[in-house]
Length: 464
Image (cartoon, rainbow, N blue to C red; front, top):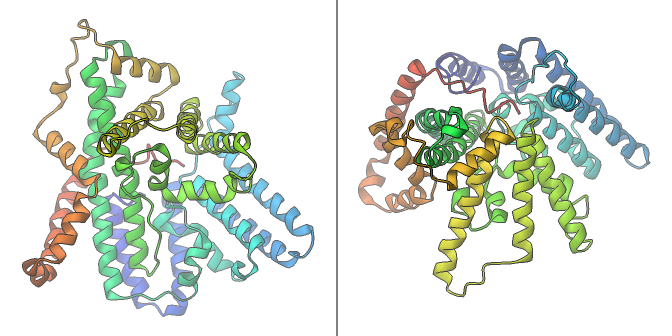
């Protein structure tokens, strides 16, 4: 079950919200734990046992680390626990890929949804307990809720225990927080259903074409649509998770901050999937030495982090190349810069450079294999008059043009700037209590129509 489904929006969520509201506060954590495991079991059936096993293993490991923190045993138990967590992740996510490299055929192993997210959360909890004893959670049900909490289970953000420990123990629910959660959830739902899914139809058409028949116009239209689609997919799910969290009294940190307005790959990764990039920074890059051990070691650490970032996203050479592609440009940026003195010109060229590098990277991310990705990239820069059997305009209609324009606008801070101006507008302030419900109602109506008619498979990008 996913957030962008009629079952979730009109059945599961209302029932859970109602029961959560009427239950005594002392019962709500236990209730949400049961709900989260049920939510996972609906989609993954018996694989919910993987989730339950993760909760048990990490609870025991956290207790052992805390108990023996003044001896070498703490480091030993931490190492064992990380090994077990990564072992489960590698088995489910990478076994097929590893065996394929040696031409061994095995039965396909089903990948549990969200396993990368709850594995990384578990590892961060254990490392934080090792570093800071006050973070140890004695109550197994509270730790279980942290690992399995359904709002951020499918597609993140990666939530650190320190950030929601207070909310788990004694969260404060309010009408204002709930309203902001509803607004954020509906906005994310609209980004997913109305924008991402519409753009996906064009992007999929381009990437399903035989590479040798792909015209330059369709190649560019496809990658532009996919560039926007993946942003609205990921940020839409993060918005829904943040909104759902607020409805239940949790305050998750932001996960996207207009990454496509960046002027460098370094800035892009400070704005894109913030919870993931900060996780790799704090639990991999800095422990490896960061930039403290000289230039050569810094470069090795960066390449290692982006290699792991690519592998984390999927078991494919495409993801590995995608990660290394970003890592390579990080190194280039650290060793050089645009030799332009004009600030305005440099700003424009930096943004053009960023978008070009990111879009080429998305080709590797989206393509079925490396050979197709390379052929696709060739058709982005090579025009052939022979490729006349597909035309970009054939796949474009009034709806897709409108959505594409809206996507470009909304992916920039223009909306934030407009809202700030509206907040100083007397008419808007006076009628805000009526305008926002109308806005939510219109979006929900459009989303409902889309959910009822849409056959797009939302699982395709989120088996992390």
